[in-house]
Length: 273
Image (cartoon, rainbow, N blue to C red; front, side, top):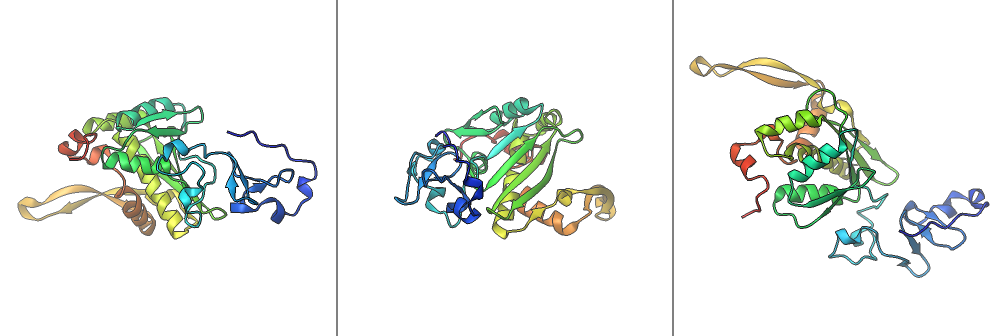
């Protein structure tokens, strides 16, 4: 990563239109280069002065491209993709690694970097979430009750990006995974948050509030005669928001461990046929 050139004392006196130019990034007044966050851009020559620091994740693209050669549709705000935070971050990361054929690393800030090939749809969904340029997924391991919950998506109208947060209780999550595949719980939370972030970016909604998945359970009787039985049914407090959460996030994510059939759990990491 290039060292940032120190700004002179008169920078703050310049109009914002002169400081923030290409892709709303800051322009260094001493050199005339635009500072993008990890490399400089020479607007006079229309070239980057160094390769994209994340270029090893995109071998099919030139390391000197920007936003996969699609700056109209994509943005590159800070290079962060999936982040795991909290006291149980390492345990959550180890669980995540156990559920995918990708090789993952986690830095001190909790950012996840993948390598290797996606072997099946579960790997592909996780890889899409990690490699996204406009949706950041945060997994917070501080949940006290339950196993996992969607905690909302915040939309940044200035740069068209979204940050989704899902809370997990890794101990409860790993216990829940006894009914499904190891690591599938964390992957479900990541891909759920990613899909909702994708929805927010695509629709330009300001946010999906944290209470989108709140509600209570009611016992209802279904069937008749010998087929009659009682079941617990989730009743959302905010039906419209819950419908978005369910249809755009939960149902499009990888399977949650408690929602898998035995066959799905057994084949979770197997390469597609």
